Length: 92
Image 1 (cartoon, rainbow, N blue to C red):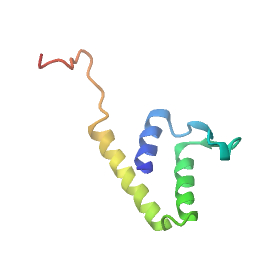
Image 2: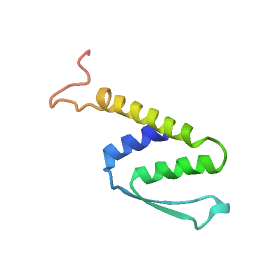
Image 3: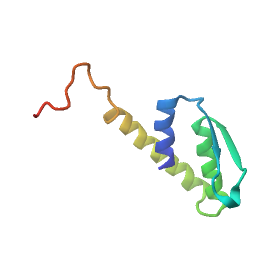
Image 4: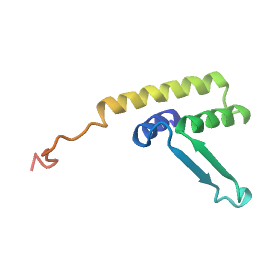
């Protein structure tokens, strides 16, 4: 899921979108993470899953590739521009 989200967010915000995340969790107060693109976030997500013993690296890579394919399908089939003058209420 993170692979698909990263692809779509990159499409919307650009390849080099800068993002800073602050934690609201009391046990993580003061922790700030900064990124220079969603690809950096995706790599960190994969690392976290491997380091935590949740997944093998190969599974993370395969999952991200699958998510990228899902995002490509969404971009080609769902995120289409609406032509000027098109009316969503054509059936009414």
